[in-house]
Image 1 (cartoon, rainbow, N blue to C red):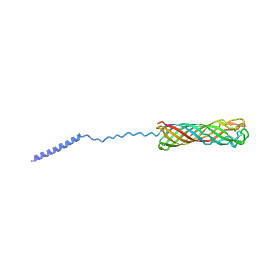
Image 2: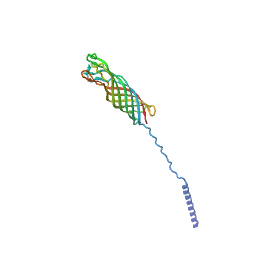
Image 3: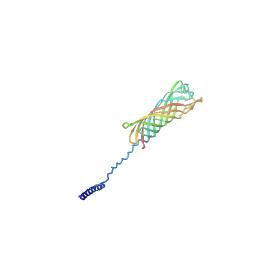
Image 4: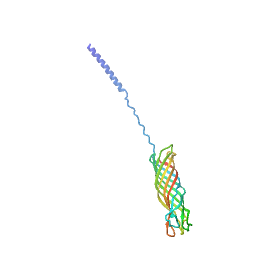
Length: 267
């Protein structure tokens, strides 16, 4: 009886052992489950907001009246201490080129070079003596043409994008070269001495406002206003029969300007 019980226990143990071994073999045959590999997408490049650009502009200047005077009131027959009256300057066309850099969506800067066609200056000078101008009267006879070159370094603040329109404000500073020509005056000395044109360098500055309208990814239309202070102009010096030397000064030459141009972005 004891041997039978022992044999039965051995049989049960063997059965459980075989079952466990079979389960282990089946587990070993099962494929190993690895976590899925998730590939991160490549980062998209950010759109470029900066870069170099070229510009070209045309415009028209409306001048404010400059202050005219003769540097030496003792020359010829000048009266009223050499001060002119009724001064005015007619308008002139302007053409400019430039290159700049856009730092981001709100800040850019450029260098510009502009040439202005000769603008006509007119004024009156008082004549004291009877010779050679008639004496005792204001003579509307002072004439000259004034042309200008200006080179400015400018900085702009772009104020945002409003349905495709991008307004901006800006300021610039640099140098101007003003040259007079075709100088005419009835207030001449009896020697017949006449004034000639001359050139003068000045500090120049400007204030701007306008709007940019993109035509394509690289080309934009620019409509703008500019207030420009060009400094002073002068004629050449002349000597009368008594040895007095003078020239005419045209001070505080400033203009309001309307401009239209194109900006081409290189990248």
